[in-house]
Length: 72
Image (cartoon, rainbow, N blue to C red):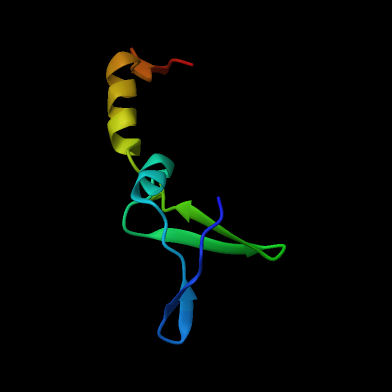
């Protein structure tokens, strides 16, 4: 997809279609990285997001200890 650069004050920016951002999982922030003269934008993923909910469900299904012994 080819897009035009837009002047924003002393800088330049790009406008990305909302559908594209939604499909890629972007919300209000993005991680920006420059690698080999390429700009890479990634959606921000909070560390351990949803971890507690997943672990809670996992622990309900498979208790780690039974009768004082670890179950592996």
